[in-house]
Length: 114
Length: 112
Image (tube, rainbow over all chains, first blue to last red; front, side):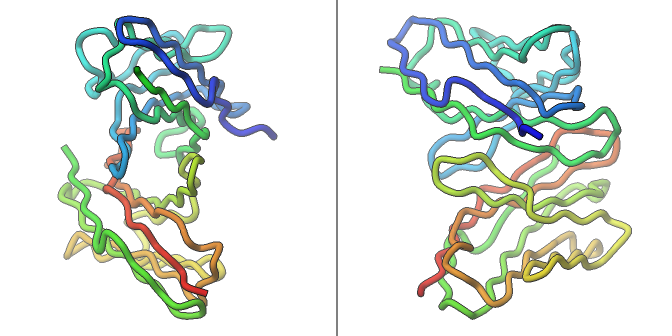
């Protein structure tokens, strides 16, 4: 039973390029969450999605960041025109549809902006 | 929103001793408190969780205690082993709100 799958594991982008991070939830999970982790910091909530819907994006920067979770395929976190401050580890978590279910995390994508 | 704090930031213990990490939370409506273990280069792994209707939960060498009045909860690891060395994160969530608020993490180092 595969866990949460994230790819790529490492991503290097030059300033101004676009970064696309993908997340496939655990089998049977329909809720996806994206978190960002800076060095020696905790995980900061970015966005919570269900299939084809953004439920809570209160942690997402207003510009350059977007997320989607289409009916078919993985969830995508997209960062346009990346800047050095976007360098971080981005983690995806998933949970089943029931309220108050535990979150299970993937191994993250480490984005480095040069 | 919920604010979760962890203490101490770094904890060193001798192998075989116990380790205790404490977290405090601010939102009295929070009712779910998980602990995650993160090893280098990996994602956080859920190791134990507790809901507000119980005061303690145990799973082999790991236990979590919850004090709702004082709004704090603690992770207890007994008979520590080198493989317990990792960063441990606590988190809190209020009922009906699926997002978790995390503390900044504790680095636990088990000295062989």
